[in-house]
Length: 360
Image 1 (cartoon, rainbow, N blue to C red):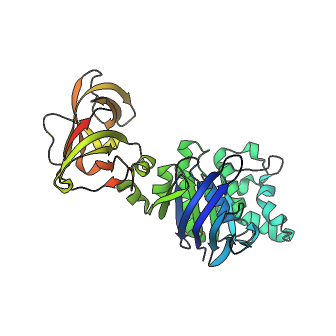
Image 2: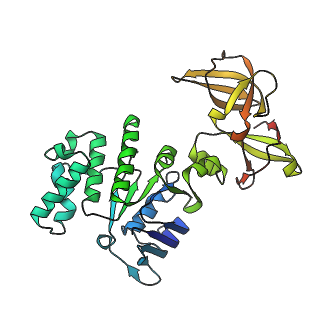
Image 3: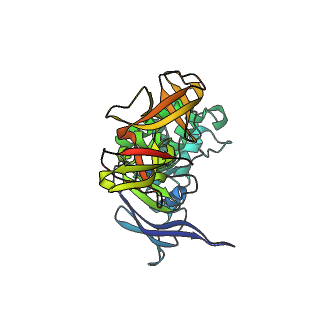
């Protein structure tokens, strides 16, 4: 139940200039899973969700909902949104300001002419499940952003959908409430055994919520995997940059597996850099000598910016070096990622490598 599959999906917006929003997208989401779409703004995440929901039509390709063909221009098939068993939560809660919370939640049932007694029962049930039953008599303006998001989720679930689509549902929330919102979504998904497809450009949403995720860039799916694998073994430099902050430098790498020297992009996260005295041990690779440019206190650690051979490298450390001092920077060997300079793809090499930083 709740499976979603798209095949060879294309979406082209035609106007003065043709714009390709989706190109050859293939995706399969098993029922009862929380699947994430990760990508930068404008990558095609929202377009894909809208086509799955039936709010937009594909230019070509197929959409299958629970084994039923829901959209195919080639076959002349288009199943209306109301018949797809899908609820959707947008980036903005989209609540009607002149209506009470009760009426906002009840709206999807009322437009289907569901009997009043059944509407009331359903609204109070879902409101209690989402712990907003004490807010039913209020108006949206009287609620916090987190409360408004709960109402939007309640409205999406009131019709008992088998599939829930969420388009960057946490982006308008205060950072300190995002963790609570993630826990809420995960709890709802598990209790109701929903299939959830969520779009986000925040890697914390993906890593902490999703069973599986797809990275979409410029309308194409470039990698599908478990979130932790996207983080540890990104298929390309673009994916690595999406999954976390990354220091990127040009370097010449020598390794037996490369059979010589190769110029690459070297990526290393701030938490994988360190200041060393002398030569690094086997667990670290020396990056080079640098000058400390800035030190910023961030609570339990400092953010230190060190210029190494023309590159400003950002490091998270418990040390508090003096601005202007010269230090030796090394990288945790397991945290070093190498990418092809032509196509940006990840290069897998053995641990026996040496690095020479190339000026930018």
